[in-house]
Length: 224
Ligand SMILES: [Zn+2]
Image (cartoon, rainbow, N blue to C red; front, side, top):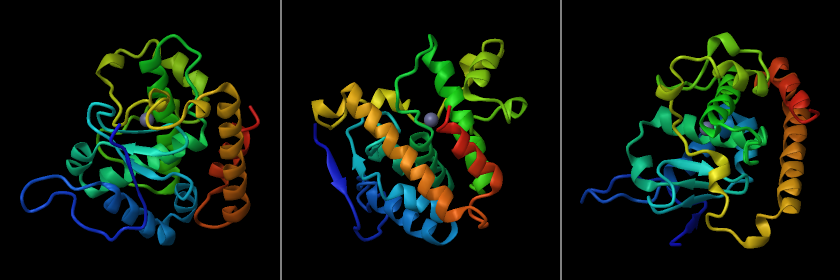
């Protein structure tokens, strides 16, 4: 599969002088270091997700299965810093929201857009810079995930909307063992993220890093 996991390596540019692409982990890892100061809740959550570089044939952009973040290095090198940081934060909060579970609805494109909207509203509340192409439906702010999915059924530009990342549930099977894909493993992964969400609420509630609205989303999301 040609996978490689990276951690704690020194920062360097994504594109080398000879034009070849270096591994994306350094920049993505460096972004996490910066978050320790200005986005500590996201930095804490990121610690549970190793960054893995994958061939373009496996992932067009980047994705997560709730265990790792998978990045196509060529795609990563094409991003500006704000979009790269946004994408990583987007994937981390997909995990917190449990979006790695396969959708139980018919239209997976529409479901990913609804999931994207949910995490992007959170990123907005956390103060992240949203790139121009960010999936966000202002009329749906405050709606539940399923309500957004239903609302999108009548959205005229549905086919034109596209996500930066590859749907999280499509990451299942990339670079991990068979026993990580069982229903039991998926349930324990959900519990793992529920515990992470609780810990973040416990650590950052009543700080500028986690507004009450965010905390109430996290508490409600896992009690659904
Ligand atoms: Zn997404």
